[in-house]
Image (cartoon, rainbow, N blue to C red; front, side, top):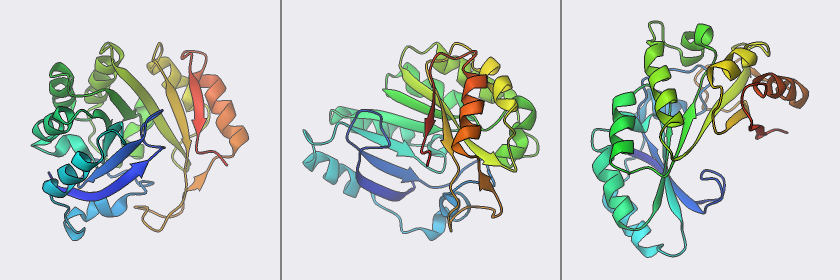
Length: 231
C-alpha cells in the first residue's frame, strides 16, 4: 500500500463514527478542482507511511475508534487493498471506502468478500459532463454506471456525492444527475473550497441558495438529498 497520509482521529469522514483516515497515493482521474493535488499528481513526493505504523496505532486504539476510512487519491488502484482491509477488519474495525467508482472490478471483489461497511462514491457530474469534471478525455462512463448499480444493489450503507464547482457544473444538470441516481440511498452536494493544493486554480463555489436549488432538482428522484460543508 502506498500510504501518503494518516489522520488519527476524525468525526467527519465516517458518518456517525469515530474513525481514523488513511490517504493513499495516485489516482486515475485528474479532476481540476481536486483539493488533494499532491496525492494525485506527486504521490511519490509524499513521505511514505509504513503499514506497520498504521496497524500498531490501530491496535492501541481498539475500543476508542469505531472504524477506518480509506481515501485518496483513489484507493482502488492499490493492488494489495483487499489484504490491507482484511487485516483492519480482523482487528474489529468497520471500514469505509471513498472511491471514484472507476474500478468496478475492485469494488465487486471487496463487496463479495464482505470487506466494506460503508462506501462513499464521488459522482463527478452528469454523464455528458463527466469527462470535463474528471479531467479525462476518453472516459468509459459504463464503468461509473456499473459501480453505481453495484452499490444500489449491495445491501450495505453507501452514499453518492458531488462537489459543486462553478466553471464545471451548472445547476440544471443536477436534475439529470438525480434521474441517473434515482432510488439511491443518499446523495450529498458538497461545497467547493479553494486551497493551495488544488490541481487547477480559478474555480469558485456555488452559494448556499444555489446549492439548495440543485438539491431540489435532484430531490425529485432521490429521497435523501443533503448539503454538506456549506457556509
